[in-house]
Image 1 (tube, helix red, strand yellow):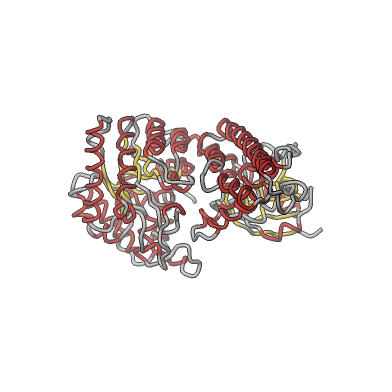
Image 2 (cartoon, rainbow, N blue to C red):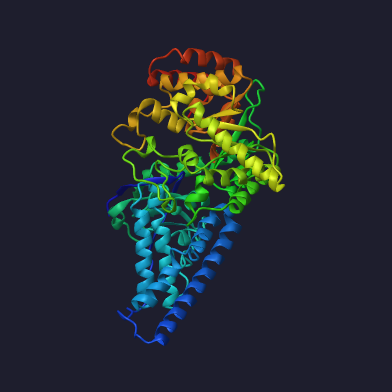
Length: 584
């Protein structure tokens, strides 16, 4: 048969080559249930009993899977399954199934299917890709409940005994978490997106994964040799001998490179002239702090607390938030942990907050604007952060600050939270540092005024670029204009760093630019104090810094800031890196 080339969404770095294993999951449930139950109370009680037993069986399965995930992948990835387990107790989920059985007199199967589709539909209607893809998690639980009602055995992938590339329409999180990365070295799915839990788990497992490949996967047969490029999202089915050999060589090269970077990750970040650089990690959950520490992070530069809210069926209370923040502080063992208050809104909606629909949510009611509009929510979070500060080196940071008045109001809520804790006798760090994200151009322009009041800045380049250049980075038609090497963006970054230094303060960066090797010499030359990135990038940037001289980078930065196009900036940086013996 001819060679087949597939293109999907690459979600996990690495090249793998192995035979295909076509995975077709059985449809959930069993024989069709009757359309309506008898009207007598005994029939209703019996059906509720069936549903309750199915829930208990489903809960046991998820608890076992979570325990397995915690042992093999860590608490963070186990949280994906424990989140599904919690959903079974959500008042907006399982109790509604019971209500359908009682009020509509329908069998448990219909109640499960109906409520699952209702809840999944709510998520699918959201604008955020991340939230849309939670619908798959809801349907995964529904399938498990239907299987339990039909007394089916737990779904598994035990048939895989050799190294394979798994090919499937889609995988539920509870399927993916069972994969053995020694045997399943690659993954291709018809559906799915970059923020699906299948993608997240594939990255954690080290499985090269391509999702959203569409109907092209129909051309794959069991046993076909497949080369998967998980970074580029490309797959070659039935490659030629030359293509297969090239893929094997790239796979071996990638393994050697990962081993080398792992050695750098364990070392401190030091430049060629002996300058120590502060490298930290961006995290979304407390458990990620443990993983970041193991990968050599000097702290947490950004704890994205909104994931605590997005992965929960209802607003997390003070105690739940406190436990998460305390766990992160303990994992860092005295190293700094910067906790950002919830950055909800824009592309991150929460169904239980009942936020208004907006034509332009990125310029609307989001982040600190919600916090100041609903101060009771912000104060609960700040009390939890403050209490966690008694257990480590915790700092607090406010997102989306555009003017001094917003900062002063947010600082006022922080002071109110402190006073409430003093009255209750709760311990916290009285000298906790409070800073702001610099992601709105007005904050960068006003950096001198802000520097007199805040304790630190953290530049969020993702939004700063978007707002400075008026470019929606998710819009394919204008995405080519989105570039953090644009001279206007670089001028703002320099302005913020210099303003903080004049006031005796410091500036970090937690946007994508901090983890880009091409940007490393420029940021070092500009005097950036702290760099925060995805933990997997730490080894890459440490290796980069080890070849750089700070004085040479300062001269480079002075030169680059005179250039007038992003293209000229990139060319200058590439030439400098080549002169240092570095390659991308």
